[in-house]
Length: 362
Image 1 (cartoon, rainbow, N blue to C red):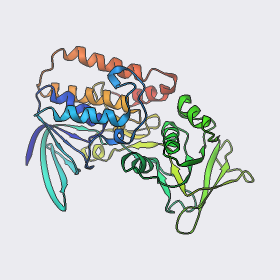
Image 2 (cartoon, rainbow, N blue to C red):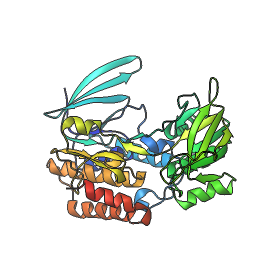
Image 3 (cartoon, rainbow, N blue to C red):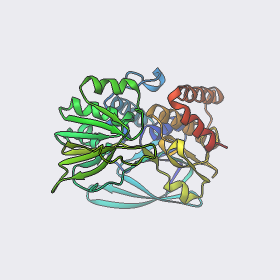
């Protein structure tokens, strides 16, 4: 049985920030992630971040990841376990883990006084004919191919989804020398920021709003994708079909919070459309309805990585303070973080996020 003050599940931007904030207090922190490398989605992001200096503005995502990992490793009271999957959470603060080291696997049990769940999100998919053909990927897989393993996913791609992720990945595909045949989205308007849409449009990539994917065709891999315009009820309109010759179809239609652990431990859960799905109710400091269980990042609601980092810092600060580890100027630090998150959610594009957090808070 491994004993620790705080266990952080998830080594992405929110988990790393939570570990750093808690580690500064002197608390013993254990952080686990099923991947062999910490950093989460940051390690796939080559674009520069917006925001303020506190959120590493004008720094590329993977560089932010390396900065956070380096800071985590600077604390002797923070222990990290990569390639380690959290299997279950049980009453009394016991968590089971499976760790892989080379060809060997180890079963571990951890007792933690406090738990920060920062497990991120799961990609949504779409039902359409032949959606299991090789060459049809989620956006995360395409980013992993290109930005982590430097492998082109194909030669010609159709992107489904004109949100920020779809637009950013389309531009990254172009940078890698992959042709982007087009970007489609069933919504009547582009969901992502104009700056991202403008970059791909200037490169000659058409963005077709009000269109959905009908089917994919091919023998042993995708060779053709058929789209169609949708009516006001989101139904395909006959006679509006357009065919694209492509060898890759990238699905980027949103994320849903990873919520399994919250259900298992008995947190009060709510379906909040604005936050992407089921999320745990939480207070202002991100503690759920179960004492000493905190949430941060996309597990709390789908947002940008900048918000995830601020939420992670809030959760780490609150969790360690509640266990009796004192932070100098705790109230000032927490108020500063609350102001940062409020600023990040201040724009018109974040209206739904603000509404979602009102519904999920107690």
